[in-house]
Amino acid sequence: MSEFEYDIKNCIKVLEEGGTILYPTDTVWGIGCDATDEIAVEKVFALKNRPKEKSLIVLLADAKDVLQYVAAPPPDIIAILEGFDKPTTVIYEGAIGFADNAVNENGSIAIRVTNDPFCKALIKRMQKPLVSTSANISGEATPAVFSMVSDKIIRGVDYVVQHRQQDDTTKQPSRLVKIDDDGNMEILRP
Image (cartoon, rainbow, N blue to C red; front, side):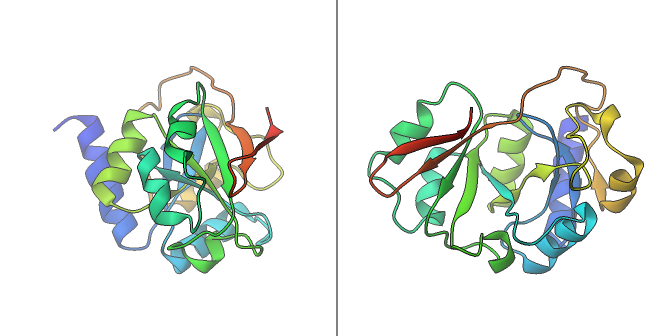
């Protein structure tokens, strides 16, 4: 069994049991859990020492999946998402199907459709959205590569993905935009 497949199987087992994972994303190293599991989401907030008012990003595998988790997406949302040329996290109004504590108190949710092969495979096999918040204690530097992840985070999660631990290629955090029900886009972080 390949390292990739070994990691996917172990991640799914941990996530289905309400656990947390440390894993590489299309941007930085992240802490993840099943975004529909309130207890798992709580574990992520506690590990990061993150205020509950600061919402988490959620990853989906395909643009069409947004239709399942957003109450009133713009009619052309799939074309918009498929047109992005870099990792882009979109804030939507009207989140549905997530754990209550994964959703901002105003009902919005930040979603990124991932192009990372590992994340895509994991989400498709799990068949649920995946929390993706940077693998750091709130206020500390975001770990672009595995060697930058603190021991506290490594010891605090239930599974550490082996895939890409040796990869020292740094990537930027995702662009952050807000898209309203009419499809108007506001760039919050370029």
